[in-house]
Length: 271
Image (cartoon, rainbow, N blue to C red; front, side):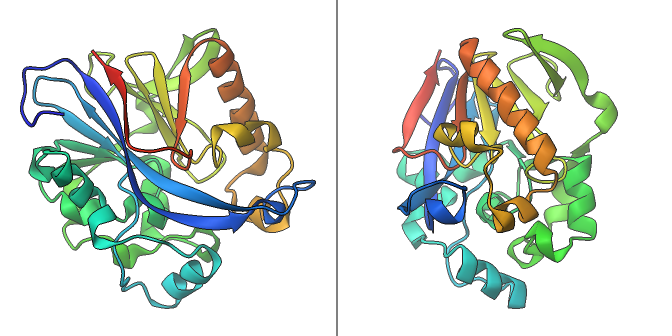
């Protein structure tokens, strides 16, 4: 991807570390299988100077996040080297991290906020629900505020709940906000996994779905969560309902991209 305006709009996936888990520990009826779950960030470049980053992957070790961080690393051990952070990934692709204009945080878990510190110039968009979580996180919400830079609050723009309006996409009702006002990159409520969890609909063709499922292949298993994975969902019933809506969107031709889908860095839209 060239660094500068004047090219067609693009959406690019960047892997920013990974963790691993046994599928039998996540889903009832699943066979024992140790699976790697990458943590992806997605960069939308509109070709005219706007660059929007959806989530930021893991922070490089070591983490200064206290006891909560130690517990998180024990349950979901991150695997990330200095060259795998989103800032390093962008630089390696010839993209200046300082050119990122906006960051959308789907929610506030460590594998989504870890790279925020590389973008002090960017406006950070998050939902009212995520803002409430950051103000007073509960242990089960898995927030490690120590990963956020001191200037974080100064760069945040909270998208009001009232900005989300009902629309139909591929025949599926969604609640959507359009902070840029041009329809190219719209925020979508995807409730269940975390309070205020957001996705992003890019060009009406690709839905960045965050952690609405651990990967596309697991959408049919949203009602099969074991006790601990179910406990850490903000609203397990809403999580299952969101999985149903996403399945319908995929059947209607919308491409779904989750934060932990397997795969390599790739251009998902080009023009």
